[in-house]
Amino acid sequence: MRVGFIGTGEIAAAMVEGLSGRGHDLIVSERNTLMATELAGRFSDVQIAANTEVVAGSDIVFLCLMADVARDVLGTLPWRGDQAVISVMVDVPLAELATLCAPASDIALTIPLSAVATGRSVLPCHPDSDALRALFGESDAIIAVPTEAGLNAHFAASALSAPLLDLMQTGARWLAAQTGDAEGAETYVAGVFAGFLRQMSVQGADFGQLLDGLATEGGLNATMKQQMADAGAPDALRAGLDGLKPRLKL
Ligand SMILES: NC(=O)c1ccc[n+]([C@@H]2O[C@H](COP(=O)([O-])OP(=O)(O)OC[C@H]3O[C@@H](n4cnc5c(N)ncnc54)[C@H](OP(=O)(O)O)[C@@H]3O)[C@@H](O)[C@H]2O)c1
Image 1: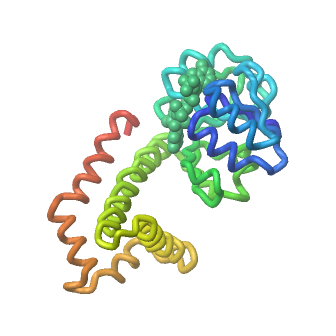
Image 2: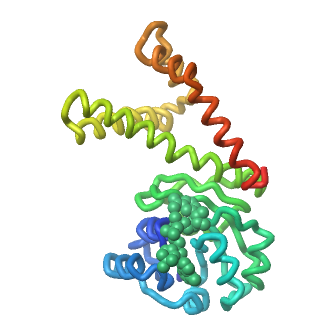
Image 3: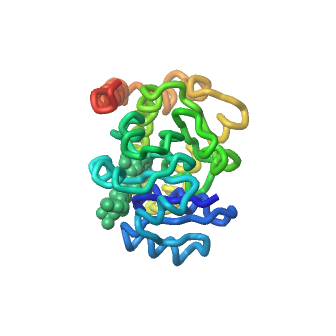
């Protein structure tokens, strides 16, 4: 496949890394120059081209721009009816993309995160996309979401990433302050959570079962969980997610 990327920023780079070496011709747009040059230097199957050439030379085009830039740029590009377009952009609905990328009509939304670079990540999409499955179906989990609103709710849930990683980093720093071993502290905290997540995929355990296993009365975990609840942490998380609803039209 010839796979193009319009907007060579953080998330495009992660997808390029994930796709490189799998027999595709990857074409990234010139901006940003530093990232495009770095990718073309690292991966022999990556070429750099102007936006127009990326679209003209691709079977599948990923849209990886900020929304305001997308509105300025996409309508000027030479879209074709026989190519697939996959947007990773928040804030640009399918109906608008259909206008901006006409006559292309095979258009889907998905939500990659940086782990797409290493595979076994999860890619919600709407509508279901043969193009996305052809590229990432073997390496990553594709979840077809039946509605655009549902996909947008997944965008909100993807924003759990930074607060939860921030909490883990806070915990690791606290541990490092006790032990004097910052690297060991990160390895331990990451390993604890990697272990739980592996348990979920191997044993089919759900969050409730894992929490039940940590609920020993008077235990350290139960004590911490209650303290965090008393401080309003779960309420703050729910309020944060609810606060994203107007932007995501939910
Ligand atoms: N980062 C994530 O984890 C993530 C996850 C899911 C979805 N997304 C979505 O992906 C999109 C991009 O996010 P990002 O984090 O990758 O942002 P980013 O790193 O800022 O990448 C956007 C890139 O677009 C480039 N650009 C600006 N004007 C352009 C033009 N006229 N033609 C071609 N490229 C142009 C920018 O280049 P310059 O630096 O030269 O301006 C920049 O490198 C956003 O809509 C975001 O919602 C991101």
